[in-house]
Image (cartoon, rainbow, N blue to C red; front, side, top):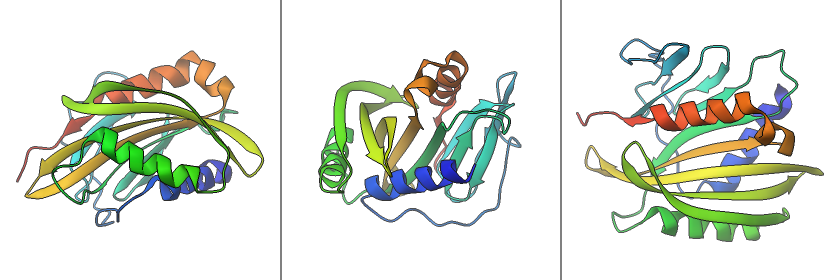
Length: 192
């Protein structure tokens, strides 16, 4: 469990280009979210999105960053995190954000092999999805990140969903299904 948290934090630090939003933790897990059967909804006051995850998974963190991992009895090292950060301007596109994150990854000292990039949507907004393999601390992890931009409450926001795991995790249908559940239930909150 500790390795999952450390890896999540390393990947977030490596890819973070701007400061994260406020970390107040007035949790609101499932109270205002219509969660599909078999899922749990999560949000809080520090974030501008809602997301649902499989009810047998664990929400490790919900304080401006949502971090979700397989059940404690799982041998998996997978983690899926969702966070938002301030964008510098409204001119940024999801591809621009990825280009900047890629530069930081390339200069991080960690060996990276970039596999693909493609356009997709997140919460109905245009998004950019990338997949790469990164070596951290002698271990190899596959990472899929989805970046979306949205102007909300008079601020410019970048939303990132990150799925980190081993090749075995990526081949595990339950873990792949959990990532798809998170992607398919991601929604932006209505503006205040």
